[in-house]
Length: 208
Image (cartoon, rainbow, N blue to C red; front, side, top):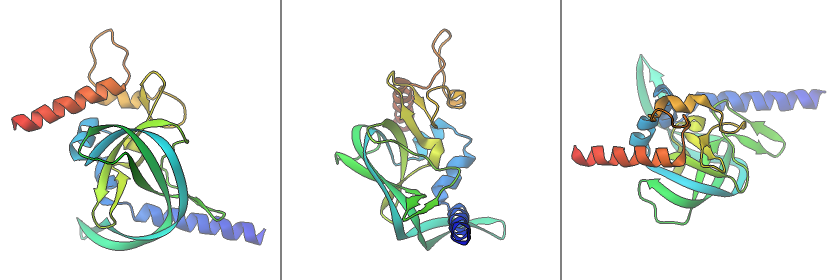
């Protein structure tokens, strides 16, 4: 019983630490109210992929974090030690940004390692062989890619190319709010609709 309580304490501490030290890009993304246009503008890379590998382990890395000091958000580089999950993505298509490799590793805070699980409410997960679309931000300090707004910018792709989050299939109405669609069209965020949004955003940038 005592050993079980100690494990619970470890999990709680890891969750608390992870919540306190969330990368600045994630904070920015959450405040964007799930706006896909913001994700497109702010992300360094958007990729359609298939997951080919994932693993979790304890890591220490220097990362840029945002802290609230005297009413202002201050960015600082700090050593972050905890459990991280690495997703290895086989890139099907680069939807936005520039990347020449066939695969890419994406880091996420949290995971299970050596009998200890560290999870956060804004975490996400993919199963091996699953297709997805993820908006990525490159952290220059650590040299790693992270999901721009954690779970909010990490989508799964259904067999009929509908994008959704979570574990319950493409019934997530929340993603529809940021998407324009014609009357009579199925009100779901699809891969093609996202491609059109990215195309229009690129054209707007070139005009400016």
